[in-house]
Image (tube, rainbow, N blue to C red; front, top):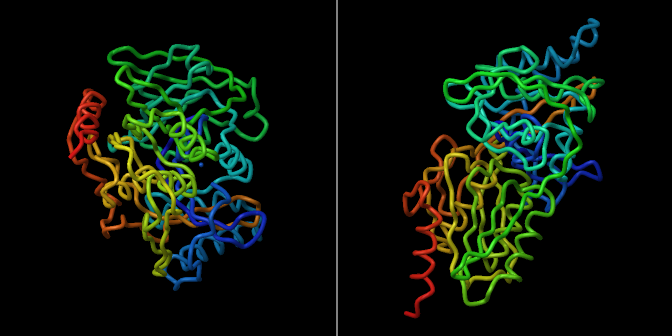
Amino acid sequence: MSGRDLFCQPRRTRRGAALTLVFAGVLVAGAATGSFPESGHPVREAVPGPVGGATRHESVQRAAAEAMADGKSPTEAAERAVSRSGDRWGAVYSEGEYQEFQEALDGRYTGVGLWARRERDGRIEVTKVQPGSPAAAAGVRRGDRLRSVDGRPVDGRPVTEVLSLLRGDAKDAAAGTAVTLGLARGTRAWTETLHRARLSTDSVTERRLPGGVTVVRIAAFTKGAAGAVRAALRDAPADAGVVLDLRGNSGGLVTEAVDTASAFLDGGLVATYDVDGAQRALHADAGGDTDRPLVALVDGGTMSAAELLTGALQDRGRAVVIGSRTFGKGSVQMPTNLPDGSVAELTVGHYRTPSGRSVDGRGITPDLEAGPEALRRAETVLTGLGDPS
């Protein structure tokens, strides 16, 4: 899959009216990175807010309803309304796409195994290739440029459109169906025809470095990610530090990001956010591991829910953050159901770190700048943090 531009969104669960906050990076070709929504902790003080964003939602709903009454496509009308709104993160999903999106947040999806994002110049770049996926078997690599899907150029397109092309329509998006990608690597340009497959994500992995440091990598905050992080901490040597690798993590379920924060904090504030002007807060649970030395690695691909976690650990003095400035995706989207079953997402607010810093458009500056040598620097820092005072 791919993590396209991320978005956060409070949304009502199918099981009831509890409003839950989701930060998701949308998958361009198949895996959940951020990409991903769903149930979890109800957002605290989930009260209705003033009109601002609601007016935009109402205008989109109205456009869809009028189109349906005229025998036209409500989804296309909603897409035009969202486009006119100027909302950078606004998007419209068909009922099937939205269902797939929710499945991706559960760690399941049908795709080719690519994570990708839209660069500031409009190009679509592959940020990760899932091992064992159709894309991996075809030799696609991180850093490759996605030029076209089934012959249609993707440069400059909203990531939602790229996602739609990669997924195919309802009858052509099943496992086994073909999709042809135009790719580029340096001066080489070529095409690959891949066959979609039913894939599962392994969003949390761990490994032990020779000195005993445990590296826990979170590729996305899919369902169960926080539990996997806690399991990795239980297995980690008690006398060694931990590196939390959030590089390339484009987001996911905010509930999982907050639960991950709870693994390292003893309660307290994780973030504040607003929805149409109504202020709300997210808090960690008490009882986390506050003693183990911790470093968080970040880069320009660290977005949304991953930035929320990074900001909490940095502001609370719990981790040393190493790497490069994060992406800067700190806005909140809210979903609206349309008459034909499709869903519109529109920005309604922004979140801030515990100290009140805004992330949107700014990102998070690491405590120590580092590039490819970031992990080595993390080991050095952990050695210092573990020394007795």
